[in-house]
Amino acid sequence: MTHGLRNAQPGRRAVSSVATQARLWYLQRLSAMALALFVAVHLATIVFAVRGGLSGAEILERTRGSWLAATFYGAFVLACAVHVPIGLARVAEEWLRWSPRLANAAAIAVGLALAGLGLRAVYAVVA
Image (cartoon, rainbow, N blue to C red; front, side, top):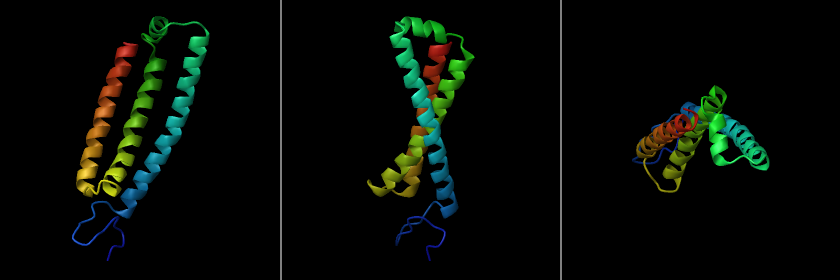
């Protein structure tokens, strides 16, 4: 009787429904598409800046007070904070044999840490 439950094993209660897993799969795919765009724009910007002869200090001067840079890199960080934990939870469950509850708790902690540290870095670069 495992209809609607993921990874139901004897003696182990499944935490996530099929609908939840489908939503997480969808969120991870959406965040992957966003990340592909963010990485491409970021790398193109770096190549353009370096080929233009800008130093790191000059680049930081240009990002100071830029709402565009803050918005771009803030969204980049949030996409990472969504994408990474979903994958880590699945890896922890399937490879490390962690319980779904432990895997999800660890993934949430990683996601919060990524968001917090990443947004702090964005603030440091832009403020």
